[in-house]
Length: 284
Ligand code: SF4
Image (cartoon, rainbow, N blue to C red; front, side, top):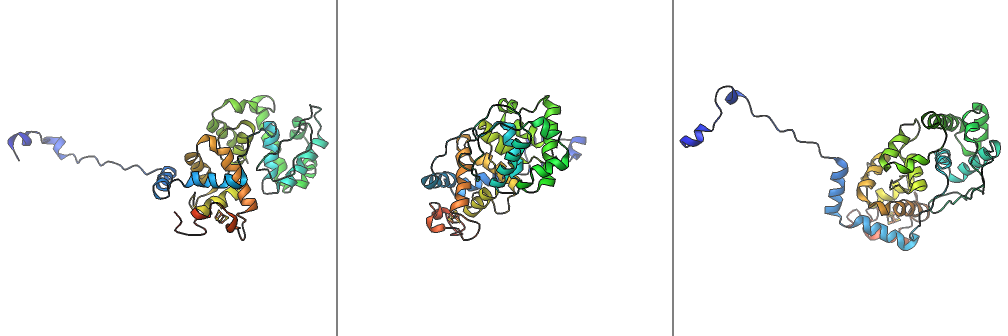
């Protein structure tokens, strides 16, 4: 060592102090997955969306219902078929009429029911304050009524307590993730329910991940096999351009319903089969 280099060495207390170890930050697993997918399977998201559009088209976004109706209808769909949720929603309208103007339901692409008849939203105040056993009976056609009735009342009462009425139109002016956080702070409202409401009422680019979206995505290899539904929401937010979210959600659901069935998927009809890891574990 030269004399001048020696002068630069710390002396005394400073010399005794061990150099601070640099802590390595844990990599964000969402970003790590997206980077890995880009590197190892470039173009997979785009090819999947383009492939699905060849048989399912480019669905146009259209508001289906006012946001409070959308939220309650989505709670009614939890763990039941959309068609049964429609029956329960119609029963709410008939039992608790609001007298508001009648509106048409635009079920649109991705909805699995037959569509609600034209009608007014229920009187939400009457639903929120109905005797619980009565409400359970009213929504029984939707299934799981003893769980859903108190959830619906708690949700409506929370909206009333925070906003002074039952309207959720204010969510349209919020940033999408803030609006989602507001909704998921309500007991029983998860990311999927919140994302359905925000996507279909306001075209907020949030990706609802239901069982069809999750199954098709895992088979293709868009998301890791062990990803939870909550992980999948975040992965899609990182992988998709905002303008692609509605189409991706709707077409993955359609694909899961008509081609990529849970049992015996019709892979011979699938435009994505060349890139699907269910068909070929080494697919590019
Ligand atoms: S190839 Fe088969 S498993 Fe893969 S997405 Fe298409 S239908 Fe589903």
